[in-house]
Length: 247
Image (cartoon, rainbow, N blue to C red; front, side):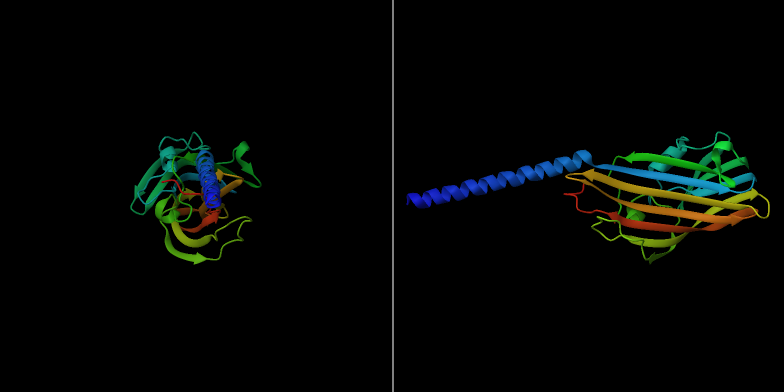
């Protein structure tokens, strides 16, 4: 009888120790995840040309969610985007199709610190921390992307990054921009915008997941009107094995 009691007691102690260890491990993992989790966006918009542009008016999509809001829009509204030249007039305009930044400047001309190669470029940028988890799996439904998004089709993705635990999904789509300016017939103008939304954390080693979206146009010579923009979206990049997702 004593042997049975000792055996039962021993098993109880082992189960108790394992239970406490499991709870302690879960608490540690959860705490490490919460304390290290950072969500952020990186946005850039580059306008480059190899010729002088005059009487320039542009409408360029700004990343937004389906409700028409985003941290990038908030910062544009107070000219809080890095790289906006002081002579530029920028205003936001929106519709049910998307939100645009309207840029007006008399001349887009070479400036020494913006010289790149044989032409010149102006880069607008913003790096900002998000107060909530970025939806990197379905940003077109729940996070900031470039609107409008039309003729969306799934395509093959680039190679999966080393360490990724989930295959990404890639899409091409059509958006739109507006460009009105005078230029030489052989002028070459490129407008490109990118946004990356990312979550990073560290439990025993660094981990992250992200999505990337971009739109771009290439224009030759004068232009006075709307133009179709090529769009690309890659979602579900990286690791999707956190202990849990914050609400």
